[in-house]
Image (cartoon, rainbow, N blue to C red; front, top):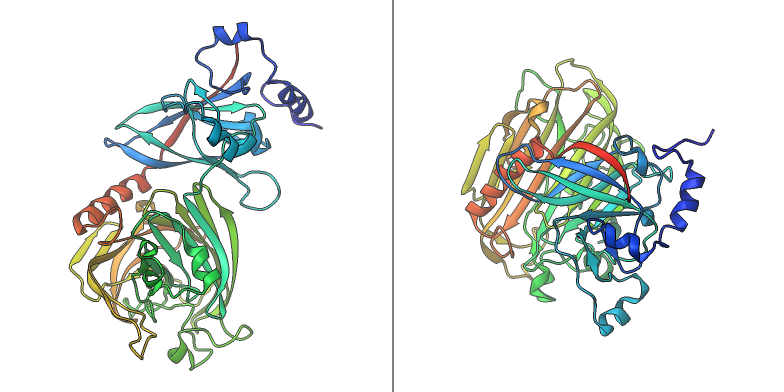
Length: 469
């Protein structure tokens, strides 16, 4: 049976109604000044989304994630039938003739009663139906704001990308990349994150893999492209996971790259083969505009103390210096019942920022940046005032700080195993050459504030379906 929407229409009836939603008399429009319009787009239906900031501080570009069950009116709709509008936003003006010619039939026209915000309706499980409506919003302390999702066909609105994700062949092996305009992350090694910073806000990882640019030497091409700012080697780098499997050795961590299956990994830092040892598969889940996701599958991880397989989903967000990660173990067979999850970052070699409180740890300091594989010293070291990284584990997972001296020294959290064998964490980075967060104090303040926001996401306090009078 066709599903009835709250407005009493089947999906087929909705499509018929929406196709005619642009034909509305000018007299009716005059009565409804509070409704968003853009050129010929004059929608008849909308859903009011009430968002609440529970913190006593403002939030900028705060992520908002809404599920289909929370907004039944939008369930199954194609993206071009939804326009998300902040009624408090500044409307875009009428474009001039040159802009209209450049943007063609899909550029924004003059807006009234609010500003359309860039959003995504992401199909995460790839069944052809969206799973999460995502956008970013600004909120004042303890503010409750109404944002509208207008329903009606609208093909106008180029959406510039503030994030990017891709998988590319880079130096003879497949590497996932994900980035915001400020910071980029990649998996040179398949389990532990490399970090690169930009000097100007831009997306550039596609140039790295398409033009075969060395991450430490891209400044020779264009200084704005920035540089890799962290050596990973056998460490946890800018973020990685493992397991605490040895109760009598509380600082010892098992890592997917280092297993009893071979002895050569100590030389290469890669697993030896894809049959007997840990293996990996990568997938782009979402590629912008406001968030981008990479999925990493880790399979056949045999530690000698257990068998494990899991998925990690890394997400980059426009305008932010952090990436979030969600870990889900599909196979979790430890020999010791006391086994716990681990998440960690490498301690900065010249640590001058050393902050740890609750589920937050920050490390950083001055650094001479040079590709560690450049043994011939062909590249000059880039000395910067500071490069920093951070790790945040949500309070709900009850993280316990542990310093791991192995693998060149790492700040880690021991996380009790959850009933569904999953947990979430956040990694962040900045450097003194960046356009934002380019001082040690600014970066530390940002991470601490971000941790509060991460633990208290913007809340959907209610939704109301409305028809135009």
